[in-house]
Image 1 (spheres, rainbow, N blue to C red):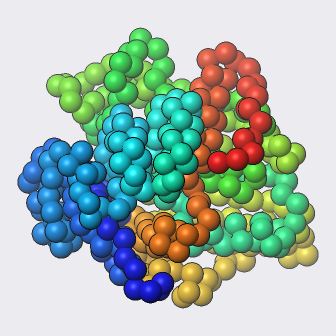
Image 2 (image 1 turned 180 degrees about the horizontal axis):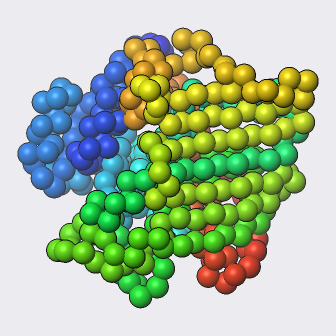
Length: 375
């Protein structure tokens, strides 16, 4: 704790993800003070206010942003609203965290990062899986040299909720062309995955990808009856990194498995590590480690200090990871610590998403721009 300081928080959006992850994270951390919540459906916001002891309820996002007690704005809303709401918060001089993706195009995300820097406010993208204890341990092993030179990084995010055509597809981009393949899993899941892999392997140099629609007819939120819509249900990609490392990436809406369906494999000259963020048997994640001398992977049990207070491996993964994210985010602001997974990082992720989509459409490798030296 730093002088007992707290941070006044306003959350925009009162849907399921806010209830499962964002709001429990703030509610559990004594350095965060839930000041206000906003939703276009007042009953949803009022229910969350009662559940989490939130002081004020709004139906107009700008009113929440303008609330003088709100120091940080959390944008937990549908994708198309992330950018305008984040820009409004930045222009009001508020720190802002947004769900991913921040924008459909990387240039817009880079613009938001620059604007935040100009206004002197902090930003963060909701890249939940950076805050898995297992993933953070792998990152520590990379940074401290335990894994040696990194050769390969494999990232998978695979869930099957849209395998059932009767399960309504959500958030089809406004103005999407229903006559051609619509990027979807690579956007919704890929943005997480591409950030994780970049965090471990460094800047992307080149990518090539293949996208496909496997469920041609399905229910779509906001439409009556079955719709024929060519949504990209799965993408595989290869990546080359500026470091010389190689990467394999896969995202899927239709690969059978449990949430959150993330697997990260890192292979280096001194060791290898595999983190599986898959809720199985009541356990949120597992971590395994091997070395050239002991090639059989051994399960690693992390100490209690790796988990946010009040959580264990049996805590549901949305709350477990988001509690960790909130603790780091609030401390970054109050203690003026270096920022992690900022809007700049979100822009770099979106830049790679866009490059993979382009590579599929043009059937070729696509080079990424050189890393920007300042943020």
